[in-house]
Amino acid sequence: MGPGGCIRCSFWWRLIFVLFWLNSVYSQATDSVRLVNGTSPSEGRVEIWYNGQWNTICDDYWYVEEAQVVCRQLGYDTSNVRPRSLAYYGQGSGSILQVQCSGSEYTLESCDLYSGDFVCGHREDAGVICEATDSVRLVNGTSPSEGRVEIWYNDQWNTICDDYWYLEEAQVVCRQLGYDTSNVRSRNLAYYGQGSGSILQVQCSGSEYTLESCTLYSGDFFCGHREDAGVICEAPVSVRLVNGPSPNEGRVEILYNDQWNTICDDKWNNGEAEVVCRQLGYGTDNVTPRSLAYYGEGSGPIQRVECYGWEDSWESCTVSSGNSSCGHYEDAGVRCEAPISVRLVNGPSPNEGRVEILYNDKWNTICDDKWNYGEAEVVCRQLGYGTDNVTPRSLAYYGEGSGPIQRVECWGWEDSWESCTVSSGNSSCGHYEDAGVRCGTDVSTTLDPFQWPATTTDYYGGIYNVQLVNGPSPSEGRVEIWYNGQWNTICDDNWNLEEAQVVCRHLGYSTDKVVAWSSAFYGQGSGPIQHIQCSGWESNLGSCSLTSGDSICGHNEDAGVTCGYTTSPRVIGSLSFVGVSLFLLTFIAIVAVMCVCDQQKASPSAAMGVQLSSLTTQPTPQPASTTHLPAPVCVDVPV
Image (cartoon, rainbow, N blue to C red):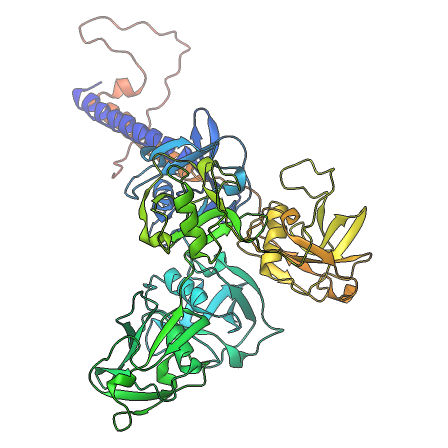
C-alpha cells in the first residue's frame, strides 16, 4: 500500500470511529428517556431508564422547566412545551422518581433525581407534550390580547358558553397564551361577535395552565352563540381601591378623562359596588358598599356612576358628573369579597381536612413541622370557623397532597395565614407530613355519606363498584354504581363536572378531559336511581354523598361521562438512532470504496489482492489454476 493510501484511510477510519462514538453517546442519551402512551411521538408519559429499569416520574414539582429538559433531550424544540400531570397518559408501573431541573439542562439525568415512591403513586405519573399546537385562540378583538375565545376540540374550533365564564376561566386562557394574568377581564354575551360551530362549557379553578386541563362539557344545550365568551388579557387599570386596610377594600377611584376621579355616594348601591369588585377580580357574593368617605376623603373630580349590577366594568355603566351635587365627604367606597387563599381538602366535613394555601399562584400543602394550635387557629379563623375547639393534625392525617410544600409559623392572633411567616418546606418535608386541621364549628350536611360495600379490596374501589355502560370505549358510558346488592344509575340532577371527575379518578382515568353527560346520553338504564354530590377533589365515589333519586328522576335522566383516554404506547429515541445509524452505514461504504481506490492508485498489485513485501522478498508462487479477479474500477467520489 502506498503511503498516501495509508494516510488517507487512517484519517477516514479515525473519523468513522469518532462518529460512531458520538452516535453511541447520542443514542444512549435519547434511549434513556422515552414517551409512552401518547397520541403522537412527541407526547406521552415520561419514563426514564435508571438503575436498570424504566421508572415513571412523580408529578410533584413537574413544571415546564422539567418538561423542557425532556423535550430538549429527545431533540424537540422547547418553545411550546406543555407538562401533564395526574397520569394524563395513563398509569405506568415500576419505581417512581422525583425530579427537579432548572430548565437549562440537556438531559434529565443532569437534574436532581431522588426516589418518589414514598410521596407519589402511579396515579400521579408525569407526562409531556413537546410540540404543543395552539389549541386556543382569540378572535375578532381589536388587539392580539383580546377577543372571542375559541378552543380546538374534537377536530374543530368551538366557542365557549358564557355560563360559568368567570375570572378564573379567563385567567387560564391568558396564561395559556403567554399573557400576564394580573389584569384580566372576562367578557360575555358575544362581546366580540357571534362565532359558529359547537359550543363548549368550561369550569376552571384558575390555577390551570391550559384550558384543556379544566373540565369541559358540551354547552350546546344551554347556550347559543349570542352568549359566546371573550376575554381581555391585558386590560388597562382603570379602577382602584385607595386607603383601605386590605387590598380588597377602600375608597373607589376611577381613571376618567386621563385623571383619577372619586365616586359620589348618591346612587352608590350594591349593584355599583359589585361591578367594581367584579372588575378588580374579586367575588361578588359578599360585597359591602360604603358611603360618606368611609375610607377618607379623596381629591380631584367627582363622578356619579349608575349600574345594573351585571356589568363587567364601570365603563359599561352610566357615568355623569357629580361635582355639582357631591363633595369629597361623600366619596364612595367598597369592601369586596376577599379572595379564597386557603382551603380544607379531603376531610369528612367542610370544617376539617388537609390545609392547602394559594401561594405563588399554586396550591401548596403545609409541612407539619411547627404546625401547632396557633397556626391551626389562624386557618380556622380565616375560614370563618370558631377557634374554641381546634385540633391540629399532622402526618398526612387527611391524605397526602401534591405540589410545593410551605412551612407556616404564626403567633395565633393573626386574621390570615398571609400575616404569618412563610418559608419553603420542600427540603425538610414530604407530603407524608402534610398538615391538617379540625376547626371548632361542625358544619352538618343534609346528605348521608355513601359507604361502599365491604367487599371493596383495592385502593380505588375498582370497576367492581363503578362501571361505565353502553359507551363506544371503556372510558365512557352511562355511570352505574353497585349499591344495596344491585347496579344503580345516577340521576343527572346536580350531575356536574365535579361528580364526573370523581368517577373518572375512581376508575383510574385522567380527569383533564372529562365531559359530563345528561339526559341518558348513553341510553337508559334500569333499576334504582341514586342522587350523588361530590366536591370534585375526592379520590373515589365513596367519599361523596348519596341519596335516593327515584322520586325526582327517571331513567331518561341517567348520567354519563367521558373520561380522559389513553392509547397504545409509543417509544421515542430508537427512530432517531436508526436514522443516524443508516447514515453512518452509507458513509462507511463510501469511505471503503475511496480507500480501495487510493490503494489501487498507489499500488495496482495491492488492489488485486497480491501481498508485497517492503524489501526484496520473492513473491509466493501461485497455482496455475488461480484466476486473478479484475481490480475494481475506481472513480473520484466527492465528499
